[in-house]
Amino acid sequence: MGQKRDLTLDLAKAICIILMVIGHSGCPDYLHRFIYMFHMPCFFFISGYLLNDKYLTNLKTGLWRKIKGSYYPFVKWSVIFLLLHNVFAYLHIYDTSYSLKEISIKSVRILTMTGSEQLLGGFWFLISLCWASIATTVLFYFTQKIDNLHYINNWGG
Image (tube, rainbow, N blue to C red; front, side, top):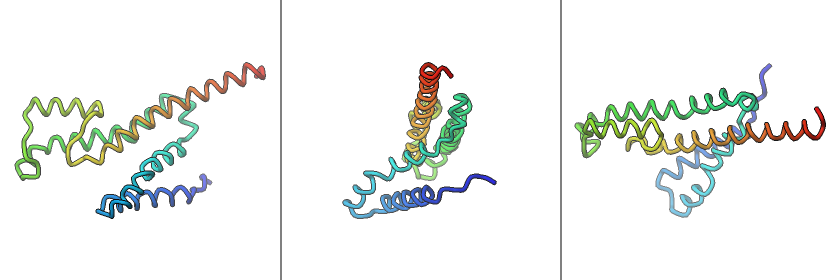
């Protein structure tokens, strides 16, 4: 039997998603400010809480999982939208087309997660989640190693 799913976390994620939709739907300013005080930090907290200990025993595997979960989707969709940029400009969705030089610069920015396409503005979340996940995984990994050394030194295990 697998582990039982924590419905509290599912409920918290659902509430955050609903609040995000409300926040982006043109709600009153006071409600928008209230929602934006906590809904994204809540997503990040849940992501950190769900970090599986097995990824802390093997740093390479843990980092690879984090990269696969946020870096690859970011790059994939950003490249697709970059390749479609001039088509979107032709269809008057964008005001201007990109030159080959601009496409090259944008490609590097996508690969380094320092920029994305206009229609993917919400992808800032993947950039932030990727770097926060990597930093948290590394921090937890080394904290665990230090705790283990402390235990061995104090208890002779």
